[in-house]
Structures are given as C-alpha cells and as structure tokens.
Image (spheres, rainbow, N blue to C red):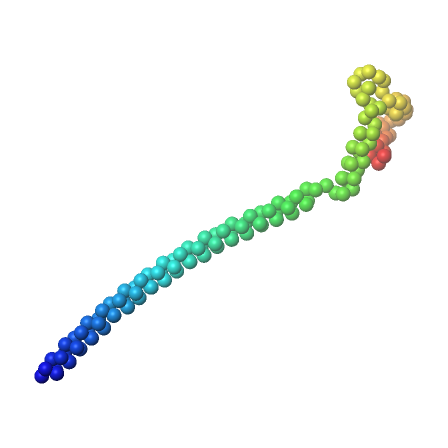
Amino acid sequence: MTSYLAQEVRLARRHEEILSQRSVLLQQMETYLGDKKTKKTWQTQAADAAHKRNAALLNDIEAAEKKLQERVYLLPHPDTVKLETLYWASVEESLPKWEQFLLGRAEAPIEIQKFTAEKSNLNESQMDYLHASHFFTILLH
C-alpha cells in the first residue's frame, strides 16, 4: 500500500506540474493571440491609411495632369510667339526714334509723317488694309 501511496503522491505532483505547465502555456497562448490581434489591427489601420494616402496622391496627380493638359491648350501657337517676339524687338528698336516725340520734345518720326500723307488719299477700306499691312510689316521687321 505504501507503494500505492508513494505512486499516488508522485502522480499528484506530476499532475500539479502538468497543470502548472498548462497554465503557463495557456497564458503564453493568450498573450501571443492578443499580440497577433493587436498586430493585425495595426496592420489593417496602416493599410487603410496607406490606401487613403495613395488615393489622395492619385487625385493630386490627376489634377496636376489635367492642369498641364489645360495649360498646353492655353499656350499660344509658336508662330504667334514668334510674331510677338519680333513685334517687341521692333518696338525696342524704334523706341529711340519715338522717345523724344512721346516726351513732347520733337516732331513725329518721318515714317509717320509719310504714312499720314499717304493715308489722306485713301478710302476707309483701303486705310483698314493699310493699317493691317503696316502692323504686320512692323511685326515682320
């Protein structure tokens, strides 16, 4: 009987050890699952935030692309730019001739006097044509 009693005590201790190990393993498993759940929640939040950021960036890129496309249509034709450049170069070139006249210190340059003399002999439609051709002549010089 003593051997049964010793075996019973030994089995009871072993049972307590097993229950203790089980308790430790259950606690570790709960901690692991809690950490895993927290990590999954964090990853889900990070993925949602990244999705929102990406959507915002995509919207910004599309808006910038649209502005650039609209801007292309707003740019003047290269021939227009060339004519404008030539016009302003002509203006800068003829400015010294006009400066004294514009300041009221001298008479108009000879080109204008000649132009006004020619103009008096023309009818209205011819004058319109002359103004336009003179304008383009200035632009092309």
